[in-house]
Amino acid sequence: DKWSQVQSYVRDDPSGEDLTLLVRLVDEYGTATILEAIEGTHSEDDADLVVATAHKVKGRQWPNVRIASDFREPQDGSDLSAEEWRLLYVAVTRAELLLDVASCAVLHELATEPADTEEDDNLEQLSIDA
Image 1: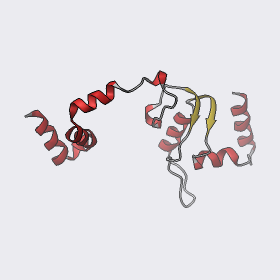
Image 2 (image 1 turned 135 degrees about the vertical axis):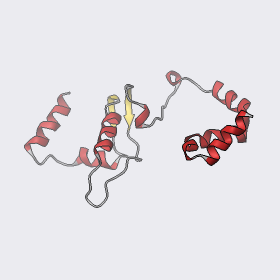
Image 3 (image 1 turned 90 degrees about the horizontal axis):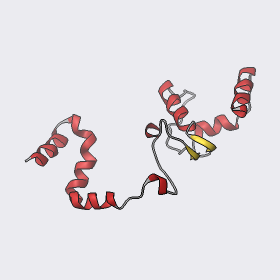
Image 4 (image 1 turned 90 degrees about the vertical axis):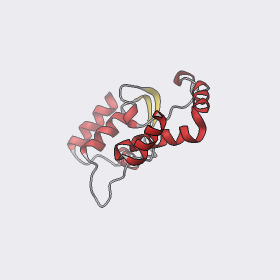
């Protein structure tokens, strides 16, 4: 049967790791329960709160955005990688009116430290004028 093939793939092949949670949910609750739960969800337009990863928000915007505390904080004076900075850029540019960075240590530190170079002053001015 095809489901047992999927289960074997997830259990035995490292390439199937991404499906582990889905297979476990189907095995534990069954497809009918999962489909019923999906049918009972509300659309994003009706939601009071949308929780999303920075990877899934590209191209979307909301009036208010709070950046969560799950971005990695650099250790031992190291900096974020270029990829991490790009991901933070995507996250912060989703806000139309209000951006809350208080929970994200990297951004909170940047937002609260005084500018110490002329270049920083220019960047600060650009963000205020934008």
